[in-house]
Image (cartoon, rainbow, N blue to C red; front, side, top):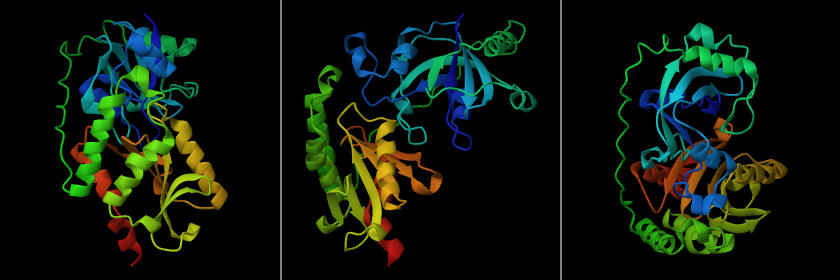
Length: 319
């Protein structure tokens, strides 16, 4: 039995309860599709490890933040790709395994004295104390009360059409482009960032009501800067958009956008996109992910994010 650790987000933004409720271990990013050996190079190392190196019967320690462990679990399935988890608090976590979780009591989880976790969302455990914790938590006598049957998974939510004709037109364009470039092995060179901005991102902003004079491309190193009103000044910034090639969206995109904002002494929301998917990071929440939309697979939660990115939401705040 190998022991692994899974990070379920920081304190105050953890989705650990969801993992325990549905009996799953989830990681992302999931935008590039299900893991496949023929396209393994297109996936981050931790996704490949999750898909190929974990075995049924292995143990997983469920972490919250860097230094708290809230449950131990036994892996109960092979690798799965579950579309219903494409928006977990703004995170796309479709890479999955079923897990029988054993939550710790409150007084236990606060006193493990466990070392801080590394930066990866999923990694092997190499600390002897953590290995002992997992083994003792999954002893047969400890698991006697656990139901043999795993909890039912949530239903996959249906796709929807946006009520705005202009947004529907952009989404249709995105689906057409995605059908041409959807093979993972071809994605890395399929569309440049400039093409994505031209063909999808700027048209979507226009469809959401932003006038051309309020959308600046390559403004002060920012891919796209969106303004509440004219003139285009830092004081009038509404949000910034960082565009990456398909399959290249990562945490570095947010970090890069924040560096640009820090240089301008500005603090506004950031949207990271590959043209097809849009993830919003809220400035007022410490740039934690908050909202996700996929134009190719648009769901009600995605429409809600588009509503919040529409020009009326920002302009009404200052009029």
